[in-house]
Image (cartoon, rainbow, N blue to C red):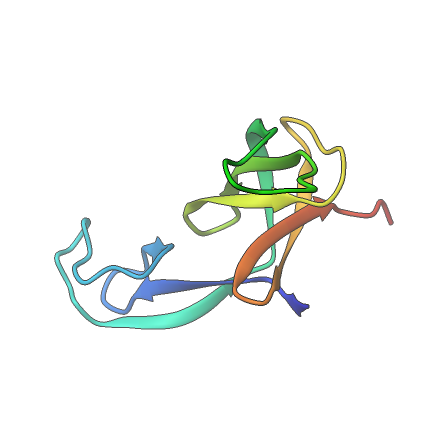
Length: 104
C-alpha cells in the first residue's frame, strides 16, 4: 500500500489528470509529469452488489472524490465514509482507495 494516488500534471499549466491524458484540455499542452494526491472529499457513493460470473462476491463501495489540488477520481472505499467526508487516498496494487482521515 502506498501513500497517495498517482496522477499526472500538465507541466505548462499545472492541471491534474487521472488517468493520464495525451493532451491537456486547458492549455492543449502535451508534457505531463507524475504527481500524487493524498486526500480528497467524498462527493457521491455507489455500491456494486454483484458482478456477473463472480462467486463469493461481497458488496463494494465506490466513491467519486474531489481531490485537493487535483482531479475528481473514483476510488474504492475501505470504510463507511459518506458524502462530505475528508478521506486519505492510497493505492493497493494499481487501484486507488480511500478511508476516513483520522482526527488528530
